[in-house]
Length: 318
Image (tube, rainbow, N blue to C red; front, side, top):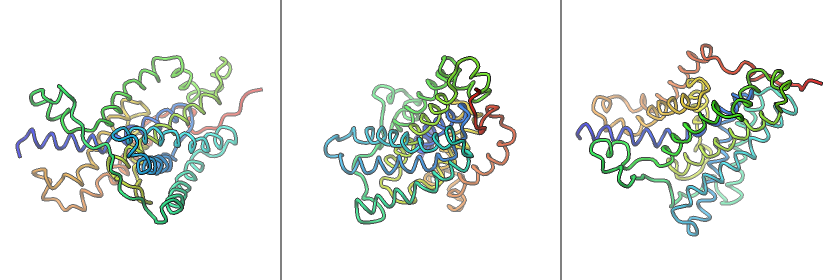
C-alpha cells in the first residue's frame, strides 16, 4: 500500500467519522453562544438517529438514494422538537442547564427503544439498504494526488458539514443575528436594554443546536451504524461537546476539533491497515477517542473561556 493510498484511507475514514461530530458541535456552539449550556447533545443525537432509521426503513423504496438526506432532515426536525424541552426548562422555567440537559440524555435512549419495540416488536431495527456510503466528486476526483485523497470515495455529509461550518462562522460573527445571539450570551442585561429579545435569541440558539444535533445523530446512524439500537449513539454527543469546547465555542474551531476526534475514532477501524499502528493492541485504538475526550475536557475546560453569561438564567428586567 503506497503513501497516497494510505493517506486517502485515513482522510476518507476521518471524514466519515467526523461528519456527525461536526454537525452536533456546530449546534452546541450556537446554544452556548446564546447563553444556554446544552449537555443534552447526546440525547438529541439519539432521537435524530432513531427518527432517520425509521424513516429510512419505511420510505427507502419510495425515495431511493435521496432517502438518507431526507432522513437526516427529518432527524433534525425531531431534534428541534426534543430540544424544545431544554429551551422551555432553561429559558422559561429557569432550570439548571446541566440538569435539564442530563434529563434529555437519560430520557432519549429508553424512549427511542420503547418506540422501536412498539413499531418492530424487538429491541433494534433491521439494517437499512439506503445509506450515505462513499461519494466521489465528478472532476475533482480525477485531480492528480489531491483528487484520490480528498475527493474520491469520500463522505458527502462531511463536506456539507465543513462548508456549513464556514457559513455558520459568517452568520455568527458577521451578521446582525449572530451579534444579537452572542450578546445574549455575553451580557443579556445590556442586550435587553438595547431592545434585543434575549429569550427569543436563547430559544433560537437551543433550537438550532437541536436541529444540527438531530442531523448529526441521523448522519451517524445512516453512514456508520446502519441501524438503530440503544447503543447506536454511545458517547458521540459528549465528543461533540468536547470538540466545541476545544474549538473555543467557534464554528471553525469546532469543525477542526471534530476532525481531530473523527480521526481518533477512525483509528479503531482502519488502524490495522496503517503501518506503524497495526502492531498496537486493538483495545488501545478502540478506547482512544474516549480517552482523548476526557483529556480535552480536563485540560481545556478551565482554560477555554466561554460566553460570560453562559449557563446563567436570565430574568427580564421590569
